[in-house]
Image (tube, rainbow, N blue to C red; front, top):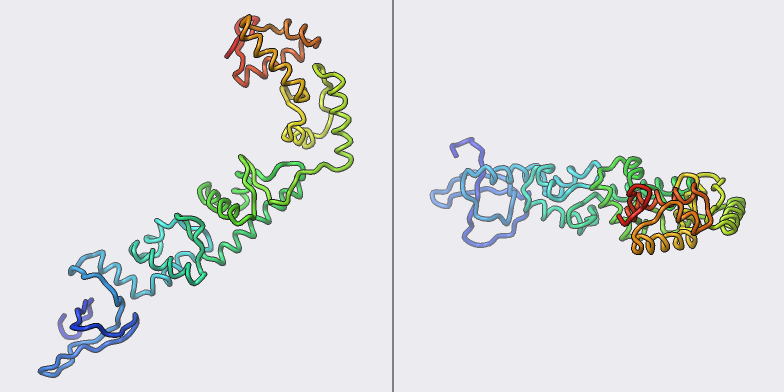
Length: 305
């Protein structure tokens, strides 16, 4: 460096000294006595850097702007979850400083690790957690018979990416805030419960279906209530207007399995005669089994799929 110029210097000391980041120093020559320069300490525990390396300069420039924790806090300031492997580019610091900064922020309680790959400011997590619970609770109040909110609808309400939603729900589930099911999410205390009037409608439909096991009446109830009965396993739907009690369905299914095994096929007429039902119900059940890939149509017969 020429007089008046500014640059990066790495000092190798004769013996250890007490120094912290941000300390100012003056560098003097003992003999002849003169001041060589001065500056500010940026890193007290560096590796031995090779000169003029771009990555070294980038790291030191980043440290001048703030501590790794400061820079990460700014990068996380949108209050959303961030992928750990993207924080280096978002904060403008090397990956090793990301590890250091995240550890410091985690220990101070400013940051929460949602899992090994995602982090979020604690304040952001509190806000996001409240938003998740508010969205789920609102849905449950509006649709008290459904098993929970669809994951995709929750994602849309929260305006989160698919991968981010998965991380958020996993963290909320581990905290006991939500229960994840295959396609839906609910709060732990939520149980779909029909009203007294709806329970009366259910009882009436199930009694009527019990009296005519293989020719049950069309389910003349509100769609939400019918979906609840199907979800709860109290009815099995084989066509839009045809449902069977589970025991009737299993009996018919068992007979079909036996027929396609020996003699190897079943017809609509044979099914109709066996269960003393009409062609409408026989055909609906066999077409339902075709859709489930249990049987397939071969002319007038059904055989094993």
